[in-house]
Every structure is written in structure tokens, then in C-alpha cells.
Image (cartoon, rainbow, N blue to C red; front, side, top):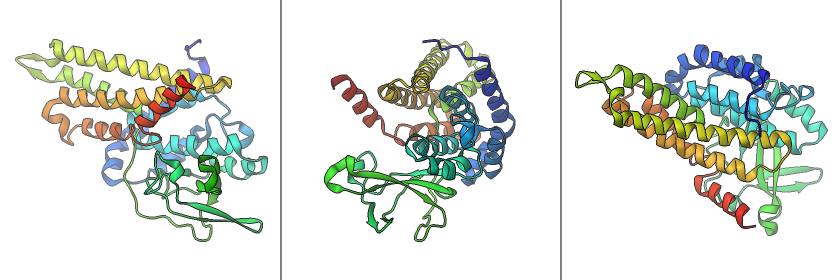
Length: 334
């Protein structure tokens, strides 16, 4: 498997890096403090073609591959995890199901405005009593003539407050367990559809870990103890080395999963491995980053505490580490 980037992939990576450094990073601390939805950044990502990177141009997308998409999400997440997850939840959790399973009519009507950035999307799956246990969903959908009536409540939905289009999971046949779950496309403004209170959730693992490493390298060169930079101490060097190695391994696992998806090969186990390792790497790396920063790492004078908070949720949302291990084990044992 050739993991070298093409010229087109390098170009989109650089565009994303420039955007992240110049436009996203300056807003990151403020967005974290206020929990404000960055409308201006969404507009810019739409202009850059980031809102529909892996989808065909006939549906409003950029017509690129999933590896390019992964590169963009990483670069943006280095600058601001919340902005990164807004993009990934929109693309992976809303656009991708419509593209993979929607009818041609649904793709034209819903995917096109999502992929070109005119509209924002989300996935409505998690409920108060059902996260990893999707079979225990309480949201139901009942056929009423030519229509469906959906009843239920969702929570912890990334982009939920701003989404124009939501992909909602509901039980249509309880007797069939997980095979009795159907997915519905619901537009904002649909009768009975309303948004509840705002929750603060955000992260993208490889990008967060990289941000923590870059900040730690910089700090270790600037911070002096015993009349020398702490980067001279072997203990610090070993932590930085471990951080860099784990991040590179997480990135390679992520790229492998993206390449498999691009080629149409099976990728479920590989995606679970990437998600598991990258999220736990993000937590380990940001933990070390706080240690390197000492007391300053725990204060809001430095971004390290934000990186740690952002990293920790990656082990929980979109499939906990425990669920990823089950997916991997089931693949080995089937």
C-alpha cells in the first residue's frame, strides 16, 4: 500500500494548514470559552470546498478522496478541535449515510446543499438510555399512510443546534433488534422537530495530539530550569519521543483506513483500530503535554488543558474505546 501523498493531496493539505493557522487558530480559545458556533469559519470552509471533500461534484462535493478528507480534518483539528468535529460530524455522520444509502432523489435534494456548504448536517443517534447500546433506542417511527411519524429525543448531537438537516435513527421493528433500526432524513422546520439545550462536546484525535506535541516542543525549548531549557533533560526528550511516535502510528492507521475506503475494500476493523488507537493516543499525548508544562499546563494561560479536555471525549463519542475493541475482536473471531 502506497502511503505517499499525491500532489493534489499535498495541495489540499497545505490549503487546510494555511486556513487553520491563519483563520481558525486565532479564534480557538474564544470559541472554547464561549461555546459559540463559528459561522464565519463554516462559510470559509464552504468556499474552500471542505464541506463535501469526498463526494462527487454532481452532488455539490469536491470530488476528492477520503484520505484528502482525513488530511483536512487533521489540519483543522490541530488549530481547533471543535471546528474539526463540526466538519467531520457534518461530512461523516450526515453526508456519508445519505451518499451511501440514499436514493438519487435524496442525494440531489439533501446531499447537494450539504456538500456545497449551503446547509449543515448532523446525526441523531445517541439517547439518554442508548449510546453504545443502539438496540435500546427509544425513538420510534411508525408508518402513517405514505408518511412516517417519528417520536423520540436525542442528546449529545454534534451540530444539533445549527443543523439544517438531521439523519435520525429510529426503531421501526423492535422484534428485529438492530436490524429493525431505520434512518430518516429530517429537515429543520419539520413539524414537531425542536432543539433542546446546548452541550459542550468537541474533538478530533490525531490533530489534537499533534497540537499538544507542537506546543510541548515549543514550551520545552523556552522553559528553563537549573539554568538550561528543559528540552535538555532526558526525561522530557523521552516524553516528546513517545508522543511523536504514537502520533505517527495513529496517523498511519487513519490513513490506511481512509485508503481502504477509497478503494472499496473492507475497512470496518481497520477504522475501529484507527479510532481506538488515535483517541487513546490523544489522551496519552495531552497528558504528557500537561506534565511537560507543569503547573502552567493546568491553567488556561496555555492551551494544553483545552487539548486534554478535547482529547478525552474522543475515547467516548462516535463509538467508545470499548466498542471499538468489540468490533476488532468480532472481526478476528468471526
